[in-house]
Length: 243
Image 1 (cartoon, rainbow, N blue to C red):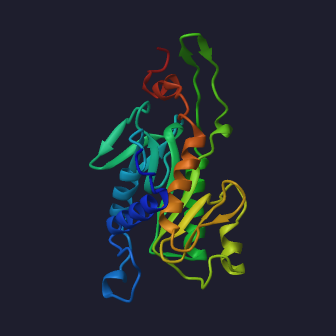
Image 2: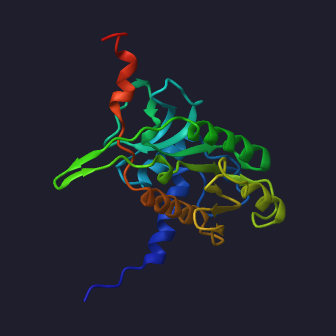
Image 3: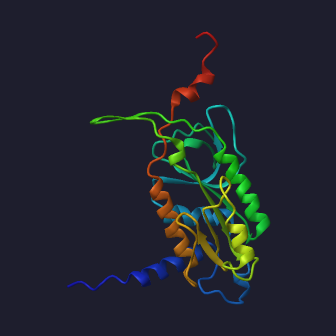
């Protein structure tokens, strides 16, 4: 009989690998090498490696069929299987908002000012107009979906925590801001992680990164497939008057 799979050991090994990918030593010490912060590029690399390939991960601008555009998003998580990518400039993509699953803001530290800034960035994407089209399948046609049933996740990524305790009153007060500009998940790798998708939960000590990553994937999975885009709405501006 095969040896049982040690899931706890596998999680620990994966977390250590992800920490190394972020440029952080797996064991936090006073060594100078642990003083740095994870960069956007490192977060992108780690998330791309962790998440299934159906998800695109990288800097984007979100656009809608009315011609509106978000500010630049540090890291967008978006559909890469069905979504048309209308324009690309280097590694920056302009992605239809219907295809955006999550908006991630990267900062060196988690504090009230940076959480508020991230909320504003997320709100700018959530305010864009989302279309939905019917989907044909072997048995018939699925009707267009209500975009409200597929919320866009707000995610905060950082290395350090400015509060002494992520569970303290000051931190909780800032984390639990109300919708529509709420942040759903967040992490300060050296200070803690939170998930608001099912109430408010915190990562166990020493498991912050792997806990956060698995919670993020769970939240993405619950969203299902991205909205089917009404391409006629996006094509309309190309049509000349009276055509």
